[in-house]
Length: 361
Ligand code: ADP
Image (cartoon, protein in one colour):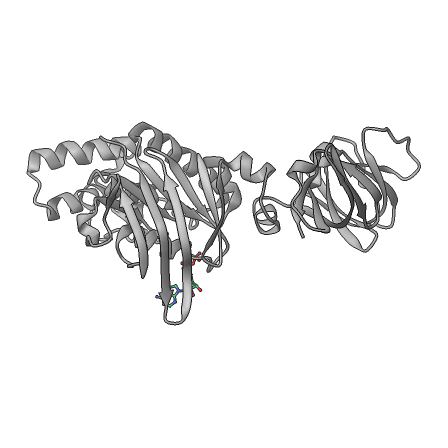
């Protein structure tokens, strides 16, 4: 099947006086697995429903394969959508649930047999064809919902939080299955989630939405390493933010006054936004933590701190450490036999300048 692109051009949508999508511009590549990530109420479902044809934009264009489909009804769009509540017909078998859309479209019996068989095989449920939904686990029901959508051979697959009803282990397994299936079909897929781990682990690229505004679009690692603002930095993972004042900018670097740290030299200045006040941003695991009296190397900029709290999370311990008036998150990989630093312990935090990114304050 031909892989198609999906494009939103200056899309705006309001519910009454509230503008829910504000000038949304997106370019989703043919065959891409694209995630829409954002907190609850940011407009993800509204955008997905708009692509499906259940909502209509007030202005802007919606293109599939370069053709504006805004005026088309949902059933004319050749789009498949899977919802969080997958709502299978309880009185029908798995086979009949999957065949439903084809029967409605008056497809001939032999073709239905072949297509339903193939769809069930794709989701690994061939052996369950004669069961009813209540004889299946949550994950299996979700796979039936997927098979039911795929069987009509849509050009674009829309998934609205399809895994959020499943428990954690199943969710992790299902997202890998989903991705493998998407790769086999090469189907352009748009996946809505509020779970950054889910988006990062599956998406080729993702868009982060906040209050109906696309904040940033890019590959997961690019968004994680180069967030454009504090919102993206904190939504995609955890980020420490320390306010700093610019002392001097030169061609090869920038000197900042940072609270609790003192003077800090960073390079290159070209990456720093304009303005006298900036935010230093760095990830919790990029900090080194040592006893206050331990030897300090020159590779790091060291800052004194006090342990405020700690949380043992298995793979690592997350500390909250007070530095000046700020509280920083510090992740320390866990090793067998290692003990946790107590609350009140005086520590030194080592920050590697290369791990710091400057954001507009
Ligand atoms: P998300 O999927 O990111 O949680 P939604 O797209 O569901 O966000 O909602 C975006 C905003 O639009 C929210 O403030 C929500 O309350 C509002 N909203 C959603 N649907 C409607 C509707 N049918 N009528 C009025 N407001 C709505």
